[in-house]
Amino acid sequence: MPKTIVMYCLMRAFTLLGVYVLFGCMGEGAVQADTPVGKANQVSIEHYPVSPIGNAPGASPQTRALALSLGAGINFGNMLDAPTEGAWGLKVEDEFIALVGNKGFSRHVRLPVRWSNHASTDAAAVIDPEFFKRVDSVVDRLLAGGSTVVLNMHHYRQLDGDPLDATDLSVDPSVVRVRFLAMWDQIAQRYAGKDDRLIFELYNEPHGIQESTWNDLLSRAVRVIRKSNPQRALVVGPTLWNSASALEKLVLPPDPNLILTVHHYEPFNFTHQGADWVQPTKPLGVDCCDANQAALMTSLLDTAVKQAARLGYPIFVGEFGAYSLAPEAARIRYLRLMREAMADRGMPWYYWELAAGFGVYDPAKHEFRTNIKQALFQP
Ligand code: GLC
Image 1 (tube, protein in one colour):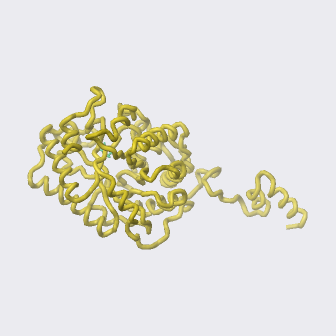
Image 2 (image 1 turned 180 degrees about the vertical axis):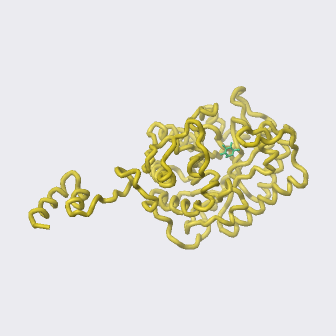
C-alpha cells in the first residue's frame, strides 16, 4: 500500500470508527466484534467456544454448602414461562412473592422464564429491556426476602425441535442455538452482581433434537457465563426431559461450581392423568402408590444419587408433582412418598408448582390447599 494511503488509513483509524476502518482500509474485511452485533444473523456458534477440555473436578466446598442449604422448594410455574406472562392465566403476583419464606412454606424458588419469546429473532437475541426489568423485579424481591432463586431458561421450543406455541416467535433455524448462548451472555452479565443465592439453570428439560447436541451446547453456555460470573453456581441437567436415566450420557465441563438436576414425574400415567398438554391424554382414575409404583419412584432417585456421586456434584429434583385431576387421596400419598424418599437420600427438591394445575396454592381463594401444603411442607 502507498505511504499516503497508509497515513490516511491510520488517521481515519483513530477517528470515530476506530479499529474497524483500519482493517477495512487494509482490505482485511470487517473486524468481528466481541459481541454479536451488526452481522447478527451471520454469527456462528463458534463465536461461543466450548469450555476447556478436561475432567470435571467435582463440586467446590462453597457449591456443596450452597446445595446443602437448599431444601423444600417451589416452582413459580406457568407464569414467566408462558409465551407471555399471563397467557396461561397466571402472573407473578405480589401475593405469591409474599408467601415465600413464611413459616410452614418454602424459601426456595425455581423461576422458569421463556426468554426466547422476549428477544430479537436474530442471532444477537437482544432481550427486551421491559421484560428484563420485569424479571429483575421478581428476582430482586425474592432475593430481598431471603430466598434462594434458581433462574432458568424454559420452553425455547425450537431448541428441542418442538412445535411452537401459538404466540411464540419463530426464528431462522440457523440462529436457534447461537441465540441460546447470546441470551445467556446477556442474562449472566445483567445478574453478575447479584447475591450468591441467585443460581442459574441452563435449560429446562433438553430433549428431542438436543439429545445429541446438549453436551456441546452446555459446554459453550458454561464458558460464556463464566466470563461474567466466574463462580456462580450453575445448574445442569441431562436430556430426556431431565431424566435420571440420561445422567450417564451427561458430559460436564471442568468447572467446580455446578449442581445437577433431574425431573421426576413417574409414575407418569398417574401424575399426568387428564393433563391436556400430554397427547394422547392419559385416562383418569389411576391410583398411587402400590409396590411397583413405589419401586419405580425410588429406583429413579437411586439412579440420580448414584450418577451424581460418580460425577462428583450435588443433585436436586427440580420438578415433581401430580396434576389436580389425579385422585385426591392418592395424590397426597404420592407427595408424602416422594418427600420422604428424597429426604432419605438427602436430595433438595422443588415442587411443580405454586398456583396452576398442580398448585399448592389456590389463587382464586387466596389460600393454600391445606392437604397438599401439609403433605409437602409441614412435619
Ligand atoms: C415441564 C414443563 C411444564 C409442565 C410440567 C408438567 O416442566 O416445562 O410446562 O407443566 O413439566 O408437565
